Length: 99
Image 1 (cartoon, one colour):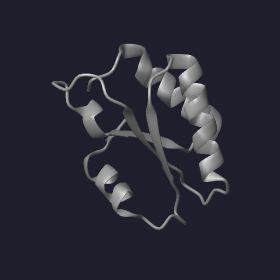
Image 2 (cartoon, one colour):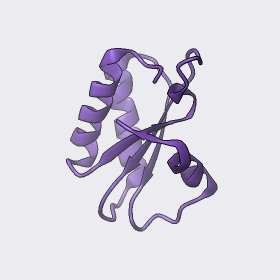
Image 3 (cartoon, one colour):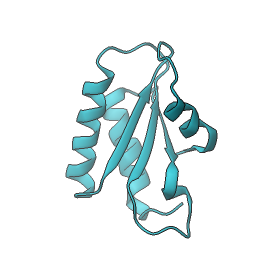
């Protein structure tokens, strides 16, 4: 996993603050490849119950990560049981690693 040591802790702790204790955080994309350098941080947040305002929560989460970790690009997807999975969700889930 190609990311600084403090990222994982900050990413998961911030997700708990924004989405609650039942949220799980999954990393997908180029950051899974240790040989890759840089790139954005692709995150999938899975929620256990239907949640309103997922886009607002994702934006808040992204902003908090920016404040904690600096001007790094984070791509955040949020799904819950009511989400109709699109191709991007299926791709993310196919190779994601839980943080």
